[in-house]
Image (tube, rainbow over all chains, first blue to last red; front, side, top):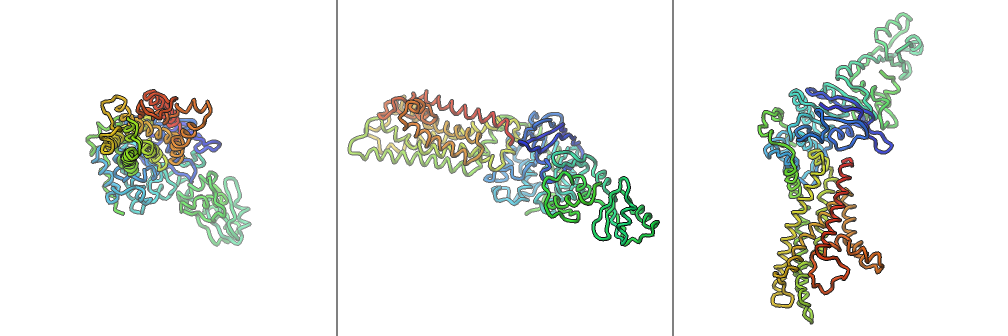
Length: 326
Length: 279
């Protein structure tokens, strides 16, 4: 179990993590979701004591990380795929890590086999691809067979097979009763992998709930309407809790109402509808709505549709602002 | 790229019968630092260069001493054996800097501090492993340097008397001096955390600052010069009857003590900062 209380990290005038409080429970996969610069990596570094909090505290199973007698058995961390000396081979890197805790060579061979690093284990890490570096990072995290796994963007750079493997692995580890804390900006991946989500934006927790709840909150809340009488419809639909946005000529998007209500209102007023589509919300939509105001780096020239591709999260979130919030 | 094993069950604790004895201890951190040191090419390059410089320069100087028209003054043979230290210390300094800055520049230090979260045991283990390694390599280099001068100095006024306590002290002083230089470099590396910056600082101190200060004929500089780390520490390698000795120089052990004090201060400051700074 990971418990953070009022965790804050400032770098000069910039606040990276702002009074964050959360608990990561054992036995399930907890996703840590947020746009770039939201403070995910900083938070994870504070969990294992690499960064010192400006305020607040974080404990792993009741103690701060540094107080554990056997840290690698307590927490296995993949914090940065580049946390390896480029001049050393993968095997020797793992051996050096294992030696600090008296973990034997057989376990080193085991994690190398598990992560599929055998063919490159004796090669120097400097020549590794992003995917191989990521596998080595995961191998290091598993080395101590830890109670808690802390994985920062573990599927970055992995091929689809590797992504599937990580998903199965973390679900298996959680099913064994371990604590699994996984950060990502790949929302679709989170929907498949995580049981619980902690969503952060600009260093603050904006949501902390089961994945199903977060998706549920967003589902069916937006309805796309096309009508030659769009202007008249806007007047009729306007009301408390309902937001109507004009998205094009004769085209509106309604949030806070249902397709049934809109259809009935239009029929009662004798207005023809050319389209009436409830927009099925996904975790992406939920995520965009939650973090719309929290995105650190907005791109200019925002797209007009919600884009599931993670690297365009900034652009998509920009459009989410104009199309209304949950 | 190979496939990942689908069988994730092998991570389970049931497969780890020896887990009970696995725990973080200082001895294991030292063993880990030895694994790290021996598994980098830069270690073998810098240590190899150290040996080659020591032995090569010893042979060259010994040969040069026998080529003069006038016989070299007695007791100069020891100077030939230790002459390579001036160059070899640069290779040793590079090793001392890289052992720590190599971790900072590659990000390895985050793995190190995740395994040893109290951090200072890792720094202490590095110092022990580095110090012992350089002592051993320094001792081997000195022995080889002595051996390589024998053909030149045997039977001449330069012959080295191993029965003389001061001569033995000067020979033992070579590995001691090199180890102290390595630890000083480790301290600067831990303090500055960048290879280029730390190398510039250490080499600048050894090659520029100490020599320039020694040349300035002002009372202030003349007063501090003997106390600078390499100037003070190198006294431990000087024969007591050395003809060109600086009259202001500290005694052999006194000077070496001053150098160790420098090392201790630099490493202590680095240790305090290492505890405080984000990795």
